[in-house]
Every structure is written in C-alpha cells, then in structure tokens.
Image 1 (cartoon, helix red, strand yellow):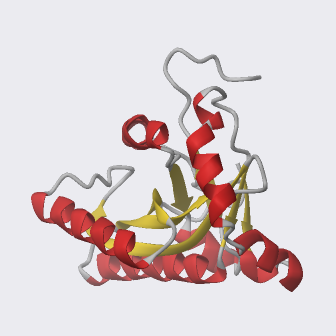
Image 2 (cartoon, rainbow, N blue to C red; image 1 turned 180 degrees about the horizontal axis):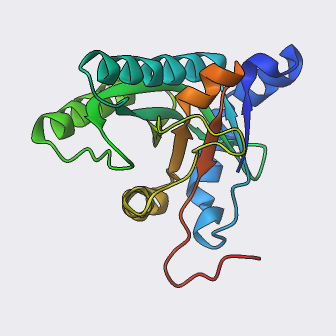
Length: 208
C-alpha cells in the first residue's frame, strides 16, 4: 500500500485526513466493504506522532541489541487509527504504542502471557479514552543496509500473524493493518522507510 507520513503533507490536506466524522466512521464500520474486496485498501496516512514513535522505537531496538554484543533487535507495537470515513480506500494511523516484545530475524511474535495481558489493558484504556481503535501492528526489520531495496516486507510468520488479526478484527468493523519499518536504511538515507500491508485470504488469487 502507498504510505504517507503527515509531516510531508500540506497542512490543510493533513487536517482533512485526520478529521474524525464519527457518524460517517460508524457507517464505514457497519458497511465493512473490505470484507467483499480484499484489495479495498490502497493507501495509509501516518501521523507525524506515529512515524516518530515507530522510528524511535525501532532505533532503540537496534541500540539495545548492539549494546549486548549481538545483532539489532526487532521491536513490535500496536497502531491506533481507523479506516478513513470519507476516503474510500484509505487507513489513518494517528498514534502507536510500543509493546515489550523483541526478537531476531523476522520472528517477532506477541505470544507471551505478560505481553498479551499488556495488550488487553492497552485495548481497554484506548476504548475508554480515544475515538479510534487499535487497528494494526508494527514491527521493525533491522537486517542490514541494502542500497537497492529496503526490508519492508512480511515474513511467513508475519503473514500468519496478520491474517489471524484480520480474521478476528475485520468482521467486527475494525480492519487490521501491518506496518514494517527498516530502521537501518531509514537512518542511512535520512528518510523514513516504512511499508504497510494487508494479507490476502488463502483462497484469493492476488492481482497481477
């Protein structure tokens, strides 16, 4: 999907992206058009706050791994946002929340009981205090600095995780998103390298 970070967008356009028409958002959630079209979402608008927090978290994972004498660590967090109520094919990510999860080589999985409890508490807090929902997850791929391409992709483990989230959340009016950050290339290029993804259902033939 096409990703845009809010800091590089015209102020008026940015305000329009983040405007929250609750009535239209409720209608969008009830209609659940993404259930009938696996290619429904094509764009993601990421707020400056969310971008900075994801990149800072990803850099911290790199530093932690290197300080311990090993490789940079992958990190993971949850995304707060919604399907855009007026832009048909778009997600809005307004904020993110780091999770106490680290790992190596495309295997960041939140299956620890303490992490699951943390996520439950976070979800309850968001439900009480925010209009948006937890609607996605992010993690980093700090593998190496490749001049020809970045490392923003979903591994087989990531795909299984994303599909499980979609199966659980999409039917409830909360379509789920996956974001991958390449912190090493972002640092080297002085530009955020971020990819956003959805998983196709197993029976769906992806468009060529």
